[in-house]
Each structure stands twice: as structure tokens, then as C-alpha cells.
Length: 263
Image (cartoon, rainbow, N blue to C red; front, side, top):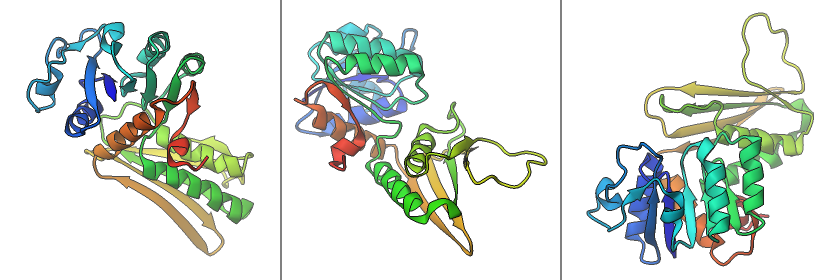
């Protein structure tokens, strides 16, 4: 399978590059970075510490997609809509783990999915998908007598809050209890907690890859469902499994749930 990387010079891009290089069934054919990136023109393999691959980083998205079966995107939200349009035009399947997308970008992904297979996930970890399924089932079974709160912890350089994964977990809770409303802060005399609150809180510091805990707090007991990432490789492994899944799939929107066969 021939792979192009969008956001190739970022931490995730370089991690995926190293895993692709080690896999016998994968070949990197394109490396795309943002215009103005100081690493433009350099060999991706050298940037990833693997030696020259013969693939230079470029800001030309169309050129970077040439010959690819699938493009894996970990970039910045404003860049995703343009990538989706070009991937659809050039018949390249798209896997994206870029978070904090707005409605315009979501519509761009929907349009691309009319022509190619598209998988977007706020977290490409397979374990996080299983956690979301557990959260949905637990909230449904415990019912309205249990309060739901989500706490996420990330490194100090993360720019968005709450994390896309925390939003995904909140969505899983709302699938079981649609009346729940997200609450992102508490300060001062807020009054007693309302039954329909769903607290979603972000903590930032150090070099934490990503921790997420969903608390279900009831009378006399609490349940804590947690996922802790210890290496960015787990997101890269998930993205590559998603890319392999999309190969030869018909146009449409897909999810990590589809990859795991959980519907």
C-alpha cells in the first residue's frame, strides 16, 4: 500500500513514517508539510532518523498525493478541508486524526466521502474506541442516578481544550442519555450540580501523551473508566490499521468502530 503523509514533519507524521518504513506492506510515496515549514525540501527519512528515503517534503498537496493509495493526516484543522478536496479529486483514500474541526471542514469531509473512503477520528487509538463503547454501555445501564464527569490530561503544548477524545467520550455518554449537556468550567457559587450536567475538564502540563478518565458517580459508589497513552506510537498504529482497512473500500464515511468491526 502506497502512503502519503500530510503533516509529515510533525511528531505524529514522523512517528508514522518510522512505522511505515519498518512495515513490509507499506511504502511512503509523499510527504506534505505546511507552507513555510523550515523542513520543506528535506528528505523525510532523514527527518525521521532512518536515513534517506528519496521522499522530499513538499507544501504542494497535489504533488504529495501522486501515486498514493491513502493519505494519513495529522496536521492543523484549517488544512484539512483543502486536503479532503484534493484527495477526492485524485482518488486517494483519507485517514485523518486532526482535531478541532469546524462545520465547514466536516462538510468538506462529507463531500470527499462521496468519491473516496474517508475515516476521521479524534483519536485513532483502538483502546479509546473500546473505552467509548464501554462508556456508552455503562451510562445506559446505570441510568440517570449516576453523574457523568470527564477529565482529560495532556502535555503543556496541546493547543485545544477539551481534547477531541474527551468530546468523543462525551458523545458516547450522550448516546445513552441524550439530555446531558456539556459543562466546561465551574467557578464561584455555581449552586448544586444539575442532573443534566456532563462535566468535561482539561488539565495541561509536562509531557503527558494523553490520559482520559470518565467518572460515573452514584450513591455510595463510583466507577472510573480510564485510558492512558504512554507513547504516540499507539495513535500511529491505529492510523495505519485504519489505512489498511480503507484500502479497496467504497466511498463513504468510516470510523474506528468500523475498523474494529463493532458497527
